[in-house]
Image 1 (cartoon, rainbow, N blue to C red):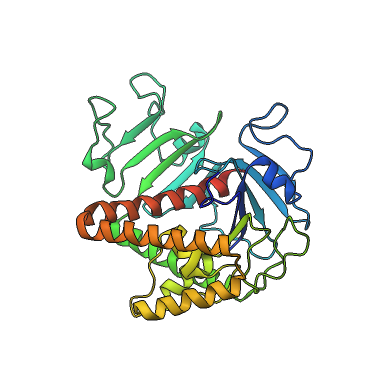
Image 2 (cartoon, rainbow, N blue to C red):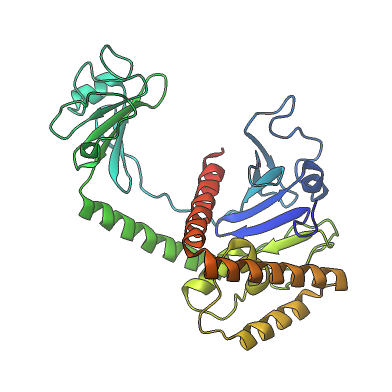
Length: 338
């Protein structure tokens, strides 16, 4: 493995930790010793549940971002608030609010009795599509090839019917744009409050292959093989215009912002950034080889960033959007892995 990609990547998230690496590297940290990992004979294909050496519940999933596996460790007291509770709105029908639609789940008979779907409008029935049935706000069903995208399907009141399980279906009903925006703002406001509470909570000691790793307030590397990234602190520093993230096991300007693609505060000059990086290096107690790795990493990132800004502004913008989408997808996979 390249020296720029450590054997173990240790990420701090608001809800817990993500430790990524090979099976051998994770077991060196005491995770799932003697157990089969996802995809191996005798183990589930997607997720293996266990406990880490500290007693915290852990889920091991097969990674798709370069590492072999990711151990997702949920720390008690840091649970993410439920986005929207599921409520019963009719006999046998439960509803959950999403950004752009309300999702109703129930059996075919229950959904028909609630007036959400007419008989014969479920996927797989005669004249209906096999996977999903689209119903416009006026009750009509689109015609033509299944691949055709109809603008009317995005209008308020339009519905999409798909199977949720062997015995139930889900009906998604679009909501007006102003209601969708209100829900979005409420969600992000709740997320800000949640992350503020998580930043104020102390963190447990990180796992280490070298015994006592020290508390995460002490910035350091573990055994020369593990870089700890506090992406949560780095994101908070960017949002609030702080010059430097103050928590986590590595300085945000050195690792978290470089690896996560986060921008440094605009008000920081080149000289101030250099001073911050030098101070961070001193706190990390790096060896000469590790300092060389960090310097090479910074130089490579700087050259790449300058090239993208000078010649490929549009490509850089799309790359940032792609990175953000990949991060959201990874979190959704982790949260739904269980």
